[in-house]
Length: 311
Length: 187
Image (cartoon, rainbow over all chains, first blue to last red; front, side):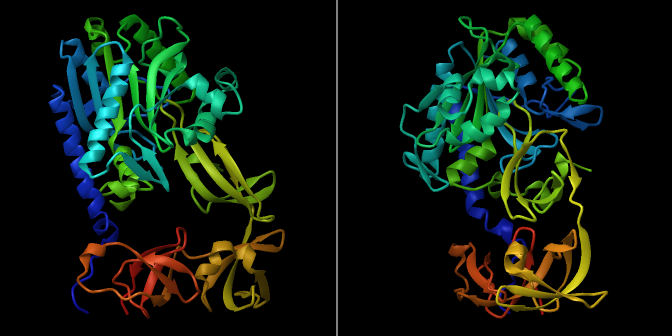
């Protein structure tokens, strides 16, 4: 019968995607090093995650696998480091779908500063640089669409996005407890279709670790980046008031209790050190999703060597 | 009782006393928001398709269906003839009721016919079936630049994507839940 046939064809045919993924990760690393960021590694296994109503950490012995490196990264900021980044694996219990895997690759970067316009600019430069590194010139082909990367990208406030795309206003969605359903079913599919889109100024209760706007404390200084209807990155002007942060953690734990979820101890060392944090900006970007969108793949499963069901 | 973590393509549940089958399923989680489970459901009696989005904590009653072991005998136009393995009684099921299952039925195959109030409303297939490839393009051996799938037609007329090394006349295993190629059968 000639040459032996490769048994794991699904893996063999991902070679092109895996080669490009490697280029993307190397480019991300070089981008931040060139911008003067220090690459940091923090422990994957931590005593407690930041309490969050809807993020369940995976237990590992008496501790947890980190759902994101944010606690340790912020402690490093509080110690006077001004520009840091990390590329690492993160774990979140029970998340599995076309855009989710319980183990995934996250990029986080933080810098001292207060204006989140700076972060939007950095997102644009990063993604343009990464796209160029795999031969994409100025546009992405994704789900039969051409998405232009030419700047400036689209920016729309959450409230305006509800007015433009949804059947009810942001306030109505919040009061009817339908914010998430309307977001995924009516708004997200319209975001980042012609150009990447920044969705900004979230309602305060949707920004657990974000600073509130001085001119309107009902809004949190938070944005998300969407390309092709897919949420790629979340950014905050970081909350640096330890007392405020403590009360929000308690609120998140109270929500967890009402959802019958286990409560998490508070990350006390972060709270102790938080008051020496300079005004800071932070972004978390899903690397698997970025690779998926840039390669025009239909699921993150196509851009990783193994997904959980293949192990 | 099912919970949201049981939701998957092919699950059968009861809504308003009628049986529905999940035909598409997506796990969603808007940033910093709660997990949502978006489904497309087909009413197994009327064929009507509805969209429903569920939250963690939602529960479902399994569809109350009777399963009968039957053998597929033959197809005549758009009518599929089955025989009950216990009573030897014969039964006709329309092609549209079979939906995707028609792609994987070969003569003498044993299946479970799903009955709702004594009416057949669908069949449950084995998870994997073996079907013979009757048409596909030749593969130029050694051409590794095309490490991708090519179309192939199997004996039921169903067309799917297979690896390039699959040749006409070969038997392949198909996952009936996804309709996708699984492996080549050594004969």
